[in-house]
Image 1 (spheres, rainbow, N blue to C red):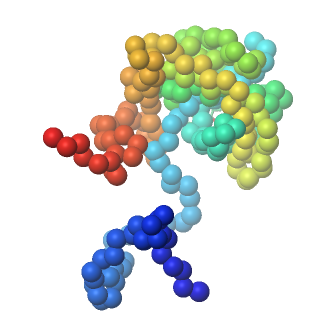
Image 2: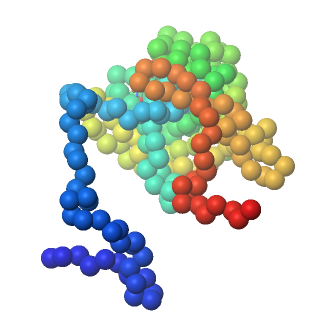
Length: 221
Ligand SMILES: Cc1cc2nc3c(=O)[nH]c(=O)nc-3n(C[C@H](O)[C@H](O)[C@H](O)COP(=O)(O)O)c2cc1C
């Protein structure tokens, strides 16, 4: 069935008709310079976060996680994917709680180190000189140096293959006041967030535009 163009209240189509012939509308398809790779996850850039876990001092631990993200705004849901062989895995599963600590350029060394050393062998907070703080809702510690600590309660664990996905609800967020300006706006860019891209760590690049700028009308001068 042919779809009719959407109309607005006055019955007119909001889509502008272009004065083009059928031949003009045909877009040439190029197959020139791309390679086909075996399937893999190439979704970059990502944050590399430090996840804290454990409900008692003897099990407190940190694990670097890049397989993390937002799942839902309301209720606020997110995930981390963790391999069952990690020391942190059993701690996460036992307590069903964790904190996602966002990382910064200043925390880059700790982020990498906690991702190549195990809590079986080291106290990562001590080794990296990170300050342990108290969360408001969950029992895991937070990293005070982190600009944002996202407290999470696990709602579901999905076995996917190499990694298990811990789907969690955000139950509290702690935001560092030093990044809140006089108007109350939280300026995360001032914290210089750390970016992970295909095996490398980077800072943020130049500001390009705010949400929606592409369709914003230019102000009359
Ligand atoms: C940048 C980076 C990202 C990582 N992302 C993940 C991840 O998403 N999931 C995972 O299971 N391991 C990930 N790792 C590996 C773990 O952080 C690493 O195996 C760590 O030593 C586990 O610590 P643990 O044994 O104390 O739990 C990552 C490591 C690095 C350096």
